[in-house]
Length: 339
Image 1: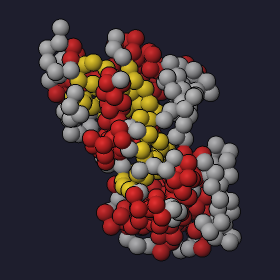
Image 2 (image 1 turned 45 degrees about the vertical axis):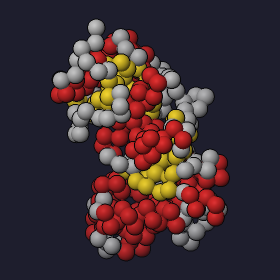
Image 3 (image 1 turned 180 degrees about the vertical axis):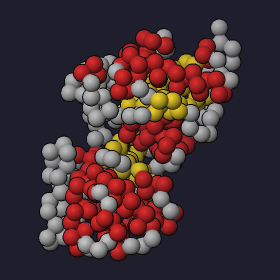
Image 4 (image 1 turned 30 degrees about the vertical axis):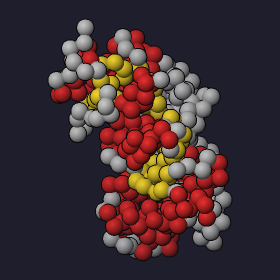
């Protein structure tokens, strides 16, 4: 028997940590900070499922909510995975051991806890959270596209308040959309290549990996005395934002290229789904306000919209990025209960 109001739990699974949250039936979160435990994904599926259960128990204890009050659980993991939460048969960056290949992570957690589990990939979960926060009571009437810049380029497409997953669960893989590079690349700049094998996709520029592998090697040839030249490229890629915040000439040129790539991605979205809002997330969200506002404005400037679209389009940042996955997963679970 329930001992209190019904709630849903959201669990964000990552390479090192799980974060969990609780959402009540009114759409209010019961926690305002991270509640993390080690994700244990490198130990294989059995240990990782137990870590997800532990994350749920930690947040329940922190809020004084009983297990009996939980109506459903929302779960997100990095992809690639199917719409039903089956990890790719080839594994994934966070799921490299053979035991993960083709593993039904959603079904396994559902069986372990005896509660319905609703699955999304982490990009879709963050996109859903941004959508709900931005639109509030209008969430089911609006549409949005989110691009989240991290190690790769994740994101999601939301239509009428629902994540578009696609037939195999691969919808919203925005990073691997190929864009034309005329006007983005300098005359002597090589065509950027993505780890997926594509040449000139969004992720090849708008990601930490793209900065390290494609952008910095070009820009550091032009600015050989730049402080970033003395650092290993992966470290320099992470440090580049700090220089962008200070108005550094080279870093500003680099981030202008990223903004142009995202603008061209959103231009495709404008002609394909004509969304109400365009969201940008990732490290830029955690940047100094003047820089992140500049970056968002440059993305908007490079998004080609028709007059009618420009009159109604909204551009915004993904809020609370560290908590966006867990919170978006909780929204997905609450939405599923309402269907």
